[in-house]
Length: 137
Image (cartoon, rainbow, N blue to C red; front, side):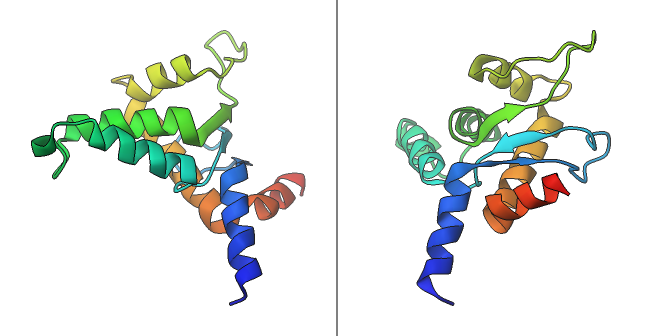
């Protein structure tokens, strides 16, 4: 493998892309704009948030700390935009605060967190250019 291909993949994951047609039941019309799962900002933020915990809470992370940290990483470094609508059909503008609320919502949070994570994995593996070409076709 050429180094240029590795560099290209890293750049794609950092930039972010729209991911559509997620293979998750009930979310086939959801589109999420996300950066790659392990972009440099996400890695730095996750490390920082874990290091803020008392040493005895770092390994293993409790489910509560893991969810809190994962949501914060997603909101601040992975999820960029979405196409979610309110029940009235009006577009729900993306904001970090609203994303945090939805990702922590007891009814939909787990499904939405899975969708964001899955989309971020797709961007990391396929890259922005391939996803944008798919979206145009």
